[in-house]
Length: 282
Image (cartoon, rainbow, N blue to C red; front, top):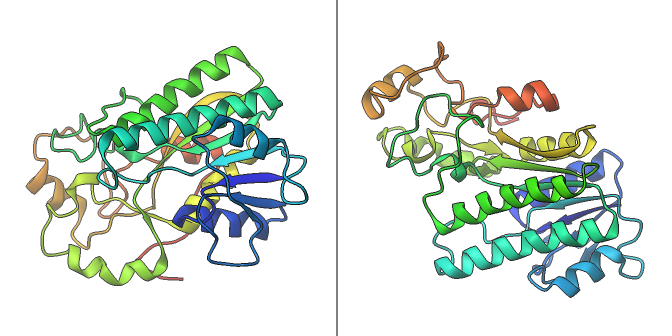
């Protein structure tokens, strides 16, 4: 069985659907009820360590024989709660998930870090484009700091147990297909979406990356930038960068609309390949 924490959220719903479609036995652990009543669900507060251990150990016929954890539950963005609350909820729940899994011998963990660790909202320009996992984290908010702390915790948990796998996915701005109707409003102002280099990810591609991470034979702590194949803009990257980030080095030739959130590592290591774009809504 795979537990998905935050299974009622945007990425969580897509993840549960994708894993189920690929034959996995899945249960959602979340404070919020799932929109789909057919989804197996248990209400658990992951900021409470006792509840986390109890849930991962088994809950009647809802949770049993857990082999992997997908940890998506969190306050999902800056500004949704006071800063100290965002940091406490995200950092403590992530610690509790990692520690509960360690104590129970669950070796396969995938969790949602964030593109914000790259330095968003890029009021200070990125060091180069496309951005990637090679430069140190640059948190600019309590939310981003909580995600960087999670990445550091993952490294130490895997140092304690070399057989453990904890994959952190620096997910871009998650979009559902119905969100694409508003992409036209982005086109008139190049600065409106410069905060994440005009990036996004379709929830279904986020789910793909999660599944591939679960299925990978990696051990240790790893982070991957996960974004869609393209930007949210009709204008080519060269024009956008010349206008908004003229002094940022370009590490290689960049295609007109390719994502500036570098996904090369995820492609190479996980076999990740985005399949969904706002330019074609299928």
